[in-house]
Image 1 (tube, rainbow, N blue to C red):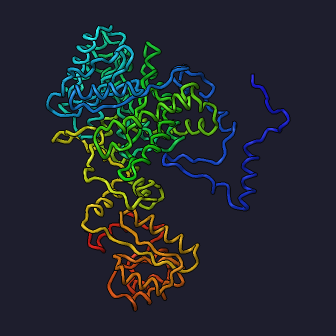
Image 2 (image 1 turned 90 degrees about the horizontal axis):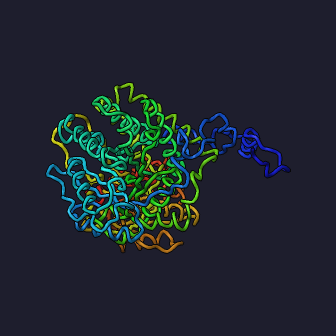
Image 3 (image 1 turned 180 degrees about the vertical axis):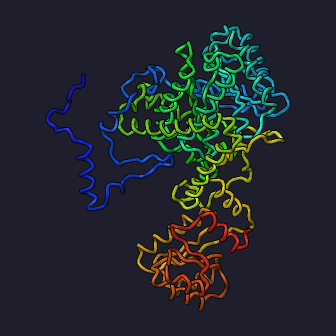
Length: 617
């Protein structure tokens, strides 16, 4: 029974809230306040109890089907750290430091190479395998990893049934990224079958099949696409291995899902809640005998796609909000990527900072003390259901095509992801979406090394043949960073002069606009004194001879100032104006103005043209 805590207050209906907002809008329609997310979900400014009265699930308890509120109550997430294995003993040293520094689980990532993977000798030494979950990943040699793991556990003396962890073998993920399997389709899936068969008799808590939903995220997926395609890939494994004689309970027990968590805070919370609910429905459709088959392990990793080479400390802030989304959404385990992982190899200081994000959220913010803290929030519950509906539609569309493999062969998954990716890249290019430090608010003085090429998913080897078209994996900042690196590596950094005049409010706003836009290419700016007269500007320009001059002031004066430039300049810099002068554009072009900076420009295209204009490219 609910207790009315505020009996003296009259209840307020959703309609009353909307009417009040319409009143405050002073004639503008309420629809002006509704925005549509990339998933196509309309997000309203107000949500009330009425939004969730018709929804099923919010009143369920943690541990109850459909697991909207989590798989159990009082189970905190596991703090993980990934380690790339190039030398087993060095990886063990990193693991020891990670465990001493607060890590609770270890992920060992073996690069995919056709030669046999690096051995495990010494990898798990001095690690308490009865309490520390270990996740191993390699898509070419899962059986070698399994036999090495079995040998290490036997040598440690702990019972096999005490070990928890996974061998994250994902042939469908490999196909999606590389366009073909590492061997024939039959042989590749057979590798998974062998490991599953052998491990199942002695390792009750070892999972050996993985769905890398993070691949979709890094290929531009919306939260709905990432969820829907993860369901489809998981269902493909259920279908394939049941056809090859495995009971669905065994396959489901061996599956785990690896998601990337992005920066859309509430949408990401909803993603994890929606996925649990939908996956339990998918498995239930296979009529498992064991209710535990409806439960899987969900691992989250902070995404790569919004991380940047420049201003890398901003990545720490991004990873913090992403971590909160994963935790509040109910991820079972979480790995935070080091903020500078795109710039350099393993660095203990960076790994330490990454771990501390989770340690603060767990031990200082106490996010582990409440189960499903978002439960009952009208917005989150509504968003979860709307996202689940979108993801389910995507899942059904893949199934109508014959399943995940057939959809990949037809190219529909690749096309859908490419559409989403191109939309995001366009938003970045036009600054509709902001990446702080990259396409807005840059630090023009910052420099980075030229060692910028990254193997995003540690899948460095690729088959020569292509069965399907691979998905396009990239970070959103790559185009902007490439332009910035071109400037950085040039022999002479272009110098920009801001010719400011007119009212200070207009002048300073337009100067800041130019700095925040052109600075994204790494150009430098001369310092000027506010209030300089046009004649003083001309003297300074002719003395310093900057490469580019931008007029920043009242548009009505641009014609006169351009005439002054044309008359007084003693050399030929590149000329531009801040703003969109409209009808004056043609006349300004005739007087030598080449660039017009305003909110509608395509930033990478404009910066590339500027680089061409000053002979950088």
